Amino acid sequence: MKTLYLECAMGAAGDMLMAALYELLADDAKASFLQTLNALGLPDARVAVEPATRCGITGTRFAVRIGGQEEHEPQAAFAPSRHPRHAPTTGLGEIESLLSRLPVSASVRTHAAQVYRLIAEAESAAHGCPVGQIHFHEVGQMDAVVDIVGVAILLERLAPERIVASAIHVGKGQVNTAHGILPVPAPATLRLLEGIPAYGGAIDGELCTPTGAALLRHFVQEFGAMPTMRVAKTGYGMGAKAFIGALNAVRAFWGESVGEHADAASQSNDAVAELRCNLDDMTGEAIAHAAQTLLAAGALDVFTVPAQMKKGRPGVLLTCLCAPAEAERFAKLMLVHTSSFGVRKTLCERYILTREFTEQQTRLGSVRIKRGRGYGVGKSKPEYEDVAALAEKNGVSFMKTANDILKEV
Image 1 (cartoon, rainbow, N blue to C red):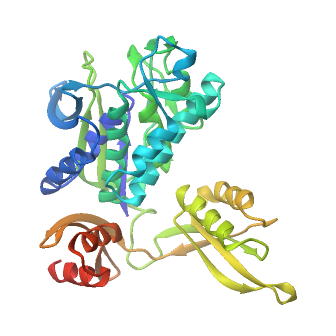
Image 2 (cartoon, helix red, strand yellow):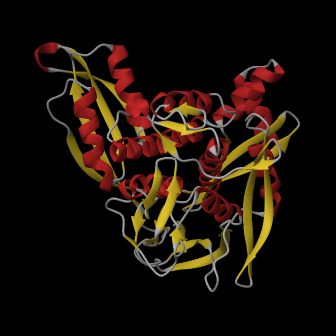
């Protein structure tokens, strides 16, 4: 099983996580990723990769420059009208609108929007105001967009089957924010880390930022010690600050799980929860909305099939697939967004192929290829969004575009 382990011994920030994952890419894929970031269309934004050395160890640091000036992670704040001294700000709705227009896959846009909402909800709870009144300062705003979208793209391309992270070092002391001097970890960061193992230490400063905490909360499936794994590659994502006697970096370990989580070709290698409910009193529009809500929340899959209900009524069987640990969260969503009074749960095992994403140049243009292998089977297919974009660009049918791409891969 492809496993990613994130060591957060010096906390985590968005740029550190992105840099650590970037180092896991194959050399020929790194330039493509950087090109993708710089093609996002963010106003006057330019992303640069810089080698950085901390404690004699060389790694990577990402720098986002807006109009030539390097940015820093944003602080969230109330609406400007309540704090006139603050710099101009942008609300969550505007951020979500910006994300929806980015030239990335639907999955990346969804993940990025969910991470930003986690930050907004944490700020809302910390400051005691509605999410709609939480605004993000323009200073650093594009930096956070790049970090969050970049991490989502990298995880889509690496396609780990298991993501584990260490306990998170949060640092100590105080941090200067738009609201004044606050203790470390800042209240919003602390809210995002609820239920996640974290600790302080001798390092004076904010080691885990709200963006870093939100990314870990959204993507990481398990927190704890490094699992038994055969490490194939290690990435060092360097922080902007240099601490004396401490390596300020997130380390990313990439490899195959060994033991109970290993991808054995002779047995089932994944568990999934199947949640189902029967519906016979909802409109097609309402059911479609419920399905899209579940997918946006991170469900593995959602689908419907026709069903014959009691008293001869036609109905629909709504099924949601998710990780077993997420079953209760998705069951609640199904109860909220459907008319059902109950949701059935079945734990299943499934056989899955090890998956990876690569980007390939074809005569029609650049396209991401999804490849699967295992159990003596190998297959590949181009990503739907890329095929659709190339079909529209070249004025040919979707099927012809897909077939032409497959001939080249």
